[in-house]
Image 1 (cartoon, rainbow, N blue to C red):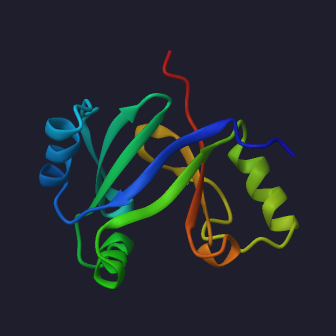
Image 2 (cartoon, rainbow, N blue to C red):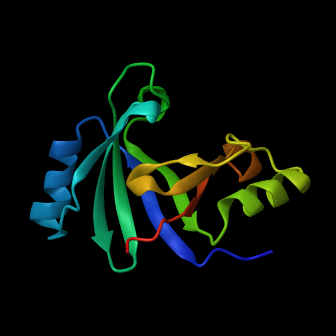
Length: 138
């Protein structure tokens, strides 16, 4: 088992990405790393680097997006924590073999072309957990 290398990002569900980003850029002085639409997840995401970790603001682009449902139930706030791993597919297989309840039983493509998989909140005590394998940026 390879423990995660680091926290890749913290996902924060928001109603309005531009308004939320304003606080982080104007009041906290963080730099906005661009806004990207992830069509198959029905969201827009904005990354704001803080040291080695990035904040990921997530706004639903459709009322049937899982983020829209999260916002309805919980309001804006922390949605998930994403841990960086060397091999998402191997970790998914290991977790499933250990009986961990998964949202994704095989990796899929996330923002920045990374490979991602979500672990079910029931497995982690209530917080949605993501594992991420970044693609080389070379």
